Image (cartoon, rainbow, N blue to C red; front, side, top):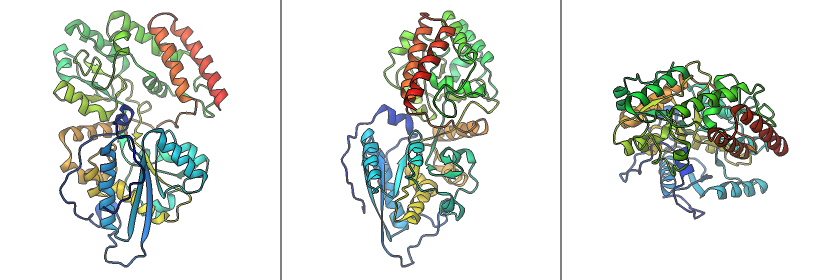
Length: 449
């Protein structure tokens, strides 16, 4: 393998990484053939043309060996398709990745291709560290023909694209179709409403004597805000993005109704959840599973329940405003790259080449290029096909993802969680909670701006 491993990492698989990845599976040990020249817009292989040798540096974070193996497999395919390009890669675990990248940025020594998280890319763009990719897209070095702009615009700043999404995820409400059938409840459709959801929770409780779902968190509130034409943060990100606290109180008032009727699991039960395999839904104790789940968690749910599970958008998403597609991460080119053309070739190959996609097997999120999806369909598992269908439904009923959270976003999240707990334990009213959240969140946002 023409690959240089520059850094050792802690290879423990973290829960946070699991949230970002989809459809994990071990790479095949069988030999791989060179990429087809015309696969999903990939330029013809230059194997027969004499090219000056180029060494391309790439960097990424890895919290598990499978992340390294999957990336190495695509690198091997790429080097076979482009023999004149040698790829050297380095990887780091967790915060060490961003620490190292910041040091490299300060010394103008960033690798050519850098892996960007959605929460980080704004900062790198603002510091003028990344190269716009529009010219490479225009000349189809990176071929995004036929791709819905919703998959591209998440990395667009001031009209220019600075990263290419490598794969998709979306928030999801899982449901147990068998339990719904026993209760006489129709599975959710894209036009499912909050009113119908509450009726179904009540029916499930009455007919089956189990929980309908769990309490909802900040990520549900963010979708709720989007459904009401609001955002969590204002445009300057120095304050909360909505003016009328009614949108906050309505969100919590309905949950207090559900809580008092026993339609959702007790908060004490939820506070004891220790992982994705834990909790009311994967234990068969609730008919719906909206507990901060993403579409890539379907394998875990089905393994725990030993059967297929349904996937639905959050209630109230039929107007296309609430739901959104979440990129697992972006590939970007450092502005200091000496080989931006070759870097663009690598990004195109990693994202849109059929053989690369089959090797990745949706590990980094579901592909979205129409030609890649068509080429992958025959090799998708039944579960992957259903995830792909679900993401297609979300794509048709969603709007552009909100801008990345501000620097103080983590602290705002803690404030929201603390206020939520006080409301659910009935120490304060939703109205008091709205006032407290606004005051504390605005203070920290303004301070950290």
